[in-house]
Length: 161
Image: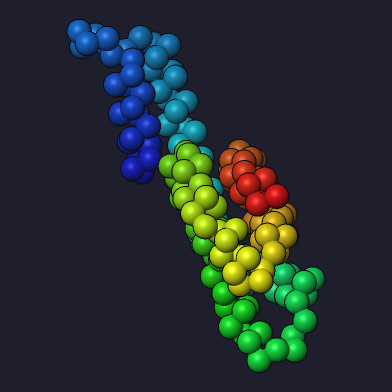
């Protein structure tokens, strides 16, 4: 069982106890079971994204290059490396958000100066929106794992818009 699942289970049980140490009802146990299953789905989605991280980041960065950048400057390689690092940061943060079941990991990067950094480096949020949309279309997740991952990808996209 992952840390997220244990934390979710602990929080669930703690919120249901009434201070007298009573047992959980069958309905509460069923709800706990759903909480654990949902955590497992998010953990599996995060694991699959992490296994494909390098591939997805490289492909998304290449898509940014093709659509937005002209390779004429000697700084181009450095710029591509910086873009790649930021795309990787977004994808790692999405994985962390999946594991935690919270948008806090995404908020940490989006709200902590990301736009200012883009302005300072003459980059556009549109590049990263494009990269995240590419990742969303090509991550290869299916079913509930896809739905969960897409929630956090969409959250990051909307925060950049």
